[in-house]
Image 1 (cartoon, rainbow, N blue to C red):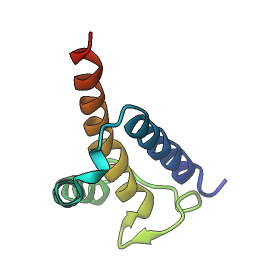
Image 2: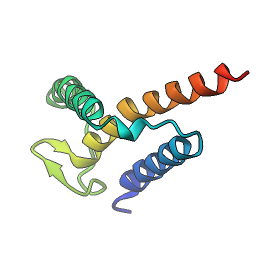
Image 3: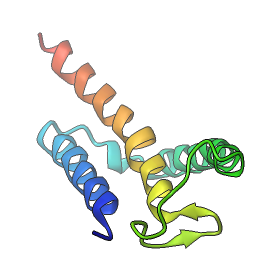
Length: 102
């Protein structure tokens, strides 16, 4: 099925958004910091992905990916933003809030 990976990424984003909302973490209010962090993450992991793709360390099934930006699947860029960058920020802010009150 096309888009399975994208659906999974959207579900993770919704989970992070709901955690942010429920615990009033205000992660999404720091837009300039998030954009800078996303940009740095995309550059660093883009280089990593480029190396891995060009050296055939991993491949992406063209029948499953929805769109490509050059040799990068769009889903891979979304993965870097949501899972690698946003996920740890949400978890860190949540843990600070929860364990501060413990």
